[in-house]
Image (spheres, helix red, strand yellow):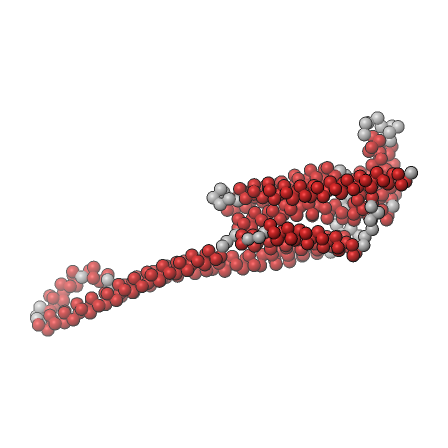
Length: 373
């Protein structure tokens, strides 16, 4: 009887695995072809203020990912711990008590509900798995699929599967983030993949479940890994949208600075030419004024006074005035240029160091979360 009972379970597990693969593929296309364009519409320049656009986009992505993941978890149904109403820390005696209580409630002879027999079988299956310590360990790490295929943890096989998954997603991230605007997004995605890889290795290779029992009393390692894998497409497309929105074209800004400097040089040349003309004019007038003073000594004061009164416009065109005007123009232009250069430096440093600091913070948070477990 046991082989006959195992075959349907194995077939069902294969169907569930295929359904999970199909769900992951459909989720990927859902995020790429529907969610990403919708997020880009929210982040379109001029639609909202910059801060509001970012907040709306993050809220939209978080809500959508939560709803989608919640529906998928509901479709997967409760795990064995949840079915029996026990936790990962429950001992065999507590599991047996919970099973007896539920079996009395759900036994087909005592329960007339249409799905009583099906629920009773599920509870019985959960009890059989959790009471067998070897099967329980396999279920925690690999889920129902691992029990159906009689899977055991093999370090070599684990790292091969891990490499296939992350190399595949890494190539996909690289292709989807091609282009100048997606440079920061690619860095964020790869940083997230590194953090997720470290978490997955730590969770799957630990002898005991490292998840805090107070926060995740019934969650298994397999469910946590599945949750990370299912949320990564949302994270990747969020990085793509925000990266394109926050992108600053440093080359374009450098070209604008060069054009501004070119215009500044033109202004300087024009002012210098005016200064040169003014100097030549003053020299010419100065030579004539000296001859008149020598010819008429008594009228020199009067002659010298007339230009002083009628030369108010000429005073503004003196070399000293032109030099002051040149200094003011240079100061104004230099202030704007220095500000633009500082912005370029700050943006460059911010974009270059964001991924590194994010990875460090993720590692610190991960170590703090699991250090005492």
